Length: 430
Ligand code: GUN
Ligand code: ZN
Image (cartoon, rainbow, N blue to C red; front, side, top):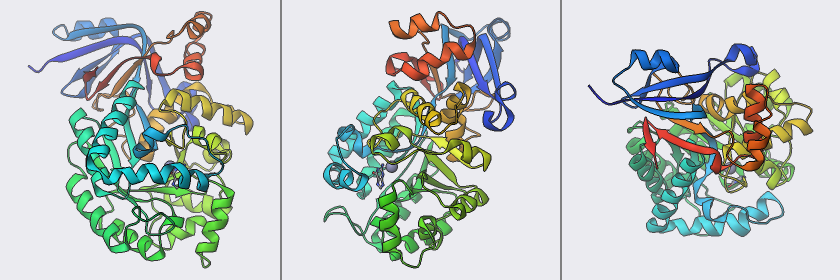
C-alpha cells in the first residue's frame, strides 16, 4: 500500500463561495481535524480521532493548533520582477520603463532565467503559495525556465511567454508572427504536461500592435483549453494612452474583445477603472478579474471595487502582482485587500479574504476542481499556518473568542514566519 500521511491540526474548508452563500454556509471548521493524504491527493477529511481510527496505518503529522488550509493561489504575478520588487517609482509607465524593462532584458540569458525561476518558486513556497499564474518575459527561454523549475518542485503553475511588439525597448520586442509561433510551440510542449498549464500572454494592449493581438486571438481560438492573461484598466493615464492607440475601440476591454481576446478563460489583471459596458461584458463572458491590492496601492493605481464586483457576480481572484506588488505574501495581500475594502466601504470578512486567496483565485484560473480547496479528491497542496507566529500576533490571538478573531491578526500582521509547513501534492516541502 502506498504511504499515507494523516495531517492533524485545525482545519478550515470552504464548500462554496462565501460572498454568494454567506460565511456560515460556505465554511467547515474543525478545531481538531485532519486531512489524509495519499498519492498526492486528499483521500479523507474529518475529525482527528475519527481519522486516526479509520486510518491506523497512516503516518501521523500533528501540527498542533496550526490552521490547515489549501495552499495559497496567486492569480497574477511576474516572476521576472523578483529581483526588482519594491522599486521606487512614479506612475506605472515610468516604473515599467525605469525598472521593469531593464530587469526583463536580463532574461535573454537562460542561466539568469533559471536562477530567478528557482529563487522565485522557493520564495512562493516559503510564503505558503503553491500555485501561481505568472507572466514571463518575451524570451521563450524565460517560460521554459519557470516550467522546468515548477516541474522539478511538482508545483501546479500557469505561465506564458509575454508578448510585446511595440512601445518596449529594443531587445524586448517580438513580432506578431514570432509571438504566435513561440507561444504555440511553448503551449504545445507544456500545457497539460504534469501539473503545468499555459496562458497566452499579451502583456497589455499598449505593447501589442493590432496585428499581434489578432495573431494571439487566433492562437487562443485554436487552443481554447489554454488561459489568456493580460492587464486591463489599471491606471487612468494608461487608459487614455490605450484609447489613443486604438481610436476605433469602444473602451479598453474592446481592444481585446475586437481581436478574440475576451472569454471565460481570460484572466484580466487589475480591472479597476471599468465602464459599465466593460463590467457587463466581463460578467456575461465569465471572465476572471484579478484584484492586486498591494500593487494597486504601491503603483498608485486605484481602489478595486470588491462590493460592486460581488454584486455583479464577477469571477474575482486575488494576486500579488509581484514586482508591481510589494510582497510575495498572500497574507499581506489579503491585508491590503481588506484595507482597500475599508476605503471603498466594503469590509471584507476574513473568510472571504481566505477564499479569495485559495478557491477564488483557483476559480479564476479554472483550476477549482483540483486546487484551492480541502475536499476529498482535490490535490494535496496545503499550508499549515501558525496563528501565533510573532509575539505581537500571539498576544492578540490569545484574546480571540472566535475562529475569525484568531485568524484575522495573522491575516493582517502575518508573513512567511506564519507558514509552519507547506505540502505540494502531499509532499512536505523544506
Ligand atoms: N501593465 C503592463 N505590464 C505591467 C507590469 O509588469 N506590472 C503592472 N503592475 N502593470 C503592468
Ligand atoms: Zn501585472
